[in-house]
Length: 442
Image (cartoon, rainbow, N blue to C red; front, top):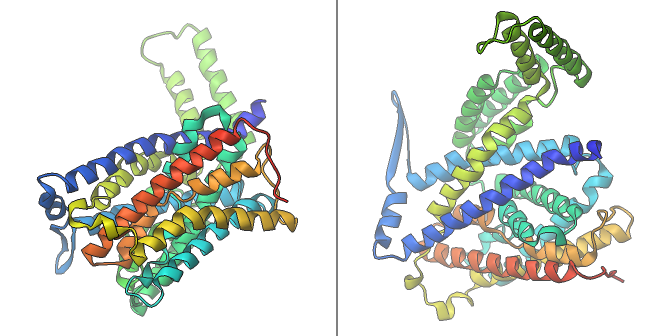
């Protein structure tokens, strides 16, 4: 039992943080909507679109506040996404073909079909380039919805949804990098490649000082920004070069800690019980602290320290800056029949669950993947609808797709509506299926 707990402990910690952050994210979304529809609605747009400049001698970067959040702070979000992807590939649910096949197949179906449905409604129109909007899943809201259902849901489904959402995030990052890049500057791209070579050398030389990786990350962000690729892609790329190897093997760590504990115990038995630690006691504690630092990888250390800041500050701030839509400026009788709205609504609410279940079923039938233990097809259908909660990444891709405020307002309304419908439908299906024996897909 102890071994099982140690395997699931990192996931449970990740799950709790995502669930808690979904509450803060929901609050920020409501605040954005209230602000954008209040008597002071003009201040919402005036505040987020005010110019903020950074000057380095004769060099200057000038963007509005919203862009600094979307292209600057959100890079840390993508950095955490990259760390999560790397961790899952190395030791998690994506670490072997058998483990990864089911969530990756589900994620693939959940990206392709929504994009096709969106394209069906928008082909040949000015909004056609928004096909990436319904492809994404918001992991915080999706896992938050699962948490509401408590023990009615098998733990295997939580692991599946987290792995599926992480694979989905990887797909969204690739889409942003490959299809939402306007033009490429070769000089800046070569500079980015040079920085990556330096990062690789730092890995090979066993450099574990996180400050150096932070400085290299800033340089990489500036190079990617100048290259024409979206600057946030730098976060994912940097994450791939963060060391994931221990300086101490677990056995060496245990020996070092055991030796230090014995020194500390000997000091106590010798009568050193002062309020302040004696030198030999302090040395023993410092040895334990150093051993803990060396057994923890830079990847784990950075993910652990940055995740709360991203989950509870950066993502809610992004929602506050991007989720506001002034409903009074929209003709609600026509808002949901516009091509862009239909594409997003059908893509997220119908395309996501259909694509997830269909491709996952094919993978199982072909023997390429296996269902998680204790999970039924009715659970997968419910989780498929939860996959239709696009929100954060959908809003992000929408911002890359459109500039026109009218189209953006329609897009935001469709994303919010589809996310609510998907979340409620998924929770109802999972609530019902939690009390029944699972069926089979014939």
